[in-house]
Length: 314
Image (cartoon, rainbow, N blue to C red; front, side):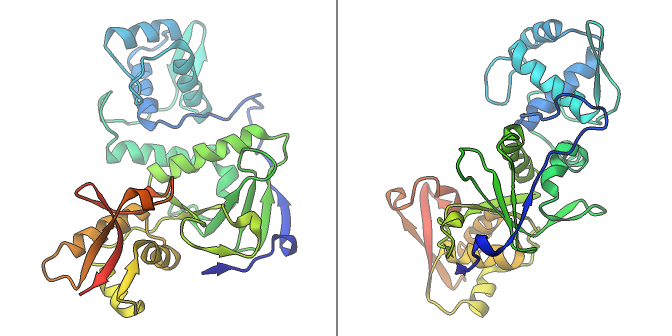
């Protein structure tokens, strides 16, 4: 597969920050861990009016730990509280904080997120104005709260991602170097999207997708996710659409992502499930991790601690 776009010939536009109606001097919340956000919201809701130091003391008293396993500090606790202020759920008062909008979490602290937790964060994902800055790159169905299309993201002249090619409109969006916080927030945006099953991403080079324009060669393709139905058969798709008897996992994933927008993990899990069936007409072929490029391991299914690289027709 080859992307024959020359970026010099496409439409050029600048992606600019959306200004808050409240005229705050800050708005970006660089918080990746959703469980931490939920836990601190629950802490705030049960300790109205407490200061950061008082909240920190409570964390230590009840052994509340962050998702990374590290102890809470005043600095990272304040970062989470400020995120909830940005989202419009918490307000600062003299010497403490109060809840001004209810997030109906039913789970407990230190526990994995449940489906209801994810629905609450999905609501924030589509409402928070800083996320909307990047939603604009996609075609957005606001009623169904979903995104549409592919975006190729890459960095140029700086370590942060600052270029976004949208093939749907043949447009190259760039972020000015004066907006580095916006560049940094792209990682938060994609991290939330992937965790909430809205987005997934793949590296073009890892998926053997060739590009005429070198600037796109190592870009990540970010795409909205369609749920794979329970009755969808990858093996049947292969039989009908791919004639080779020896198929790489990457080639299968590439076609299914391109045509159906399935999540990579869902494709891997379905391949293993179907191939482990006694009557399957394909067998999984393993490979050593030494033959997989660095950072590409996530694209390959793992069975019995071994990576699966190909399917063989039997």
